[in-house]
Image 1: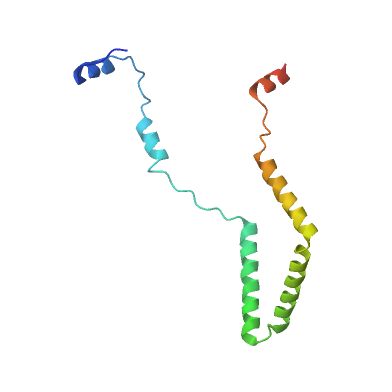
Image 2: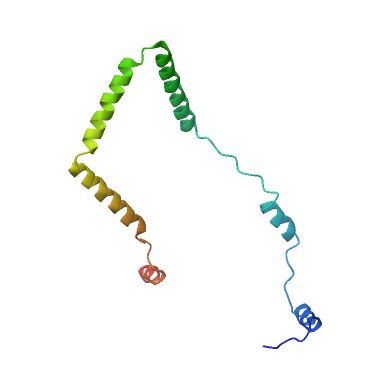
Length: 125
C-alpha cells in the first residue's frame, strides 16, 4: 500500500478513482426517509376501543358504588375471590408446575429452530 506524504497527493489519488455516479435523487430520497419522514401514528384497533370503553365503564360503575356506599358486598365478594385465587396458587405442586412451565418457555425461546443454509440446499435437490 502506498504511503502518501501530503494531502495533495492523497486528494489526487482519490479524485482519479473511477467511481460510479450516485443516483440523481439520492439526496432527496435520504432526506425523505430521515428528517422529512412523517411519523407513524399509533393505530388503534376496534377491539382495543371496546376494551378500553368497557374498562372505563366498569371503573365508573365501581366509583358510583363506592360513592353511594353500596360497595360493601362487591368488595367482600372480590376479597373472597382473591383469597381463593391465592389459596389455589399457594399449593407447592401448583408452584412447581408454574416454574416448570416458565423454565420450558425460557428454554424454547432460546432454541434456534432455523435450519442451516447447507441443509436447506440439500433438501431441495
